[in-house]
Length: 480
Ligand code: TXE
Image 1 (cartoon, rainbow, N blue to C red):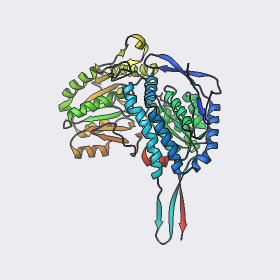
Image 2 (image 1 turned 45 degrees about the vertical axis):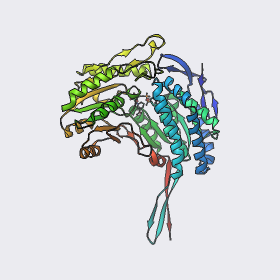
Image 3 (image 1 turned 180 degrees about the horizontal axis):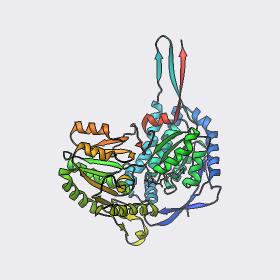
């Protein structure tokens, strides 16, 4: 069985522990590869390699770093079919989704940051007649990148590419649940002849491999995407060490639908924003608020179209939802559906596990689920479920829906459907979230600041924001 070994100092290395974790194929529930069960020793080795590589990597010209990253982007593009297959197999997502979204986005991430570093600039502040201040922006040194399982290569590369572009060397840990495309990226880096130690990829669990990375005194910054509870733990460890921290955490995003919206477009996009990637995107709109005059119409159409969605074999081009990422996560989602029932919710469609025939019968499939009749304060409407489960709730006034939208501890993204321009702008300003989509969802321009407020995170990724995160500003004041 294939063993995924660590990529440290330019080569693939077995873990110090000599042990491996099972990597499960969610579509069948069977083990199909083994992952290095890395520990503190492997992290130490990776950090040392990254430290050694730092002076020469940070000393390269911008154009030279640009060339390496562009080469990686091109290699990902040239292997996109195999990478999409691997991503779908590892995560359970439909193959067409990995082909259309995950892998093209990984190509774009490397290309975007390869290019944006050429355009990155710092400020100068003049004191007329007296002095000029200018800001130097230097790379931090060795940085740690920790990523989750929902968009594996997409989010892994979203961190690694800017960190490297800015001149840092990296120790990265992908999720132990979906390590495969990170392993394939290691092979690509070897093929691209990325200098040894510039990027190191260490596999393993959060506790045994992630935690020592966060605690390592020579790691200057941590960029993390994952659950809010993990983010809180990482902040508790890293903040007293004065590390720079970027935390992209969970969401419980409102999708607000007004009567005056473009109904057909809204319905089509709402199906996606509810159930894309089996609802396992931190930006999914899991709380849907509908203006009362169109509530019944929306409910009928939305339930009908959701009930006709196909769930099953991720390789089937007609399938809408593939498998949930793991058995443990499926159990968590099912427990929330049970909770919704206990809280008085009515399951309008879904709510059940699906058992396809043949080889797939042991896979983790769940019907997309719509729940109504819940108070917006209840746990189902307050806690992140992170699966194909949404609630629908009618509202009467703008003030009422704003209060409901802002009622959770999260603040990642929001979607508003209306053709009233003034209302759209007004709500966009008052909604407590880092990202607001008006009449769209997941329309992404990589130059924009990306991140959440409240318990959805700290800091922003994307564009120049992330290049600022991965560099240290230094003011130089020259008197004349
Ligand atoms: O995340 P974890 P999981 C949410 C979602 C989901 C929940 C748990 O609600 O149900 O998080 O998912 C590493 N020190 N999101 O279990 O545990 C871990 O190995 C250092 C939202 O995947 O937070 C993995 O690489 N690292 C999210 C990464 O952290 C640690 C996307 C994420 O794992 C660690 C995914 C530790 N102590 C889940 N413990 C989003 N916002 O996109 C774990 N890790």
